[in-house]
Image (tube, rainbow, N blue to C red; front, side, top):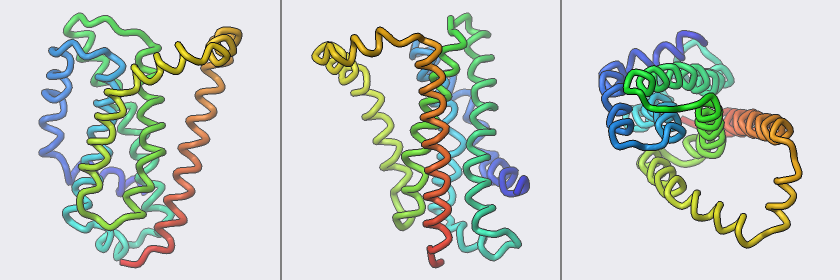
Length: 201
């Protein structure tokens, strides 16, 4: 299964050459550190899905001595591994250019990536290859754009929610959010596995 994860890096080594310049563009544009880290985390996993869409890699993967469960596991575990690698590179880049960021920026950026991945990874196994990656990335941009005003609106017009959140300790909020995101990621993994097991190539 490790070889499947390594395969993703080997296949897109040319795209990886633009990874750092891509991140630096966001840093120079003074994009908030959370978004820099989130975009960095998204780069490799979604590039892999984009490549597989064009090359119809699933036919090749199913001819190799790997079970379908192992193929899906490599995608989900690989995404986590690339997330840590991306966080490290993004943090180093932010530090080198004297951009202020905190541990919370890293945690929130990583958490948002896992949440976004949990919601979108199964889509690649439900629909036929084509323009899924483009659709997902456009959705990401739109969600990023509207998330702040939507959150501000909800908190401003629903005082009950605001009061409830204010009464919770930050430690409880962080732990509950972490458990919720990891649980959703695990459910997403299970859903993708079930879909992939029944899919015909």
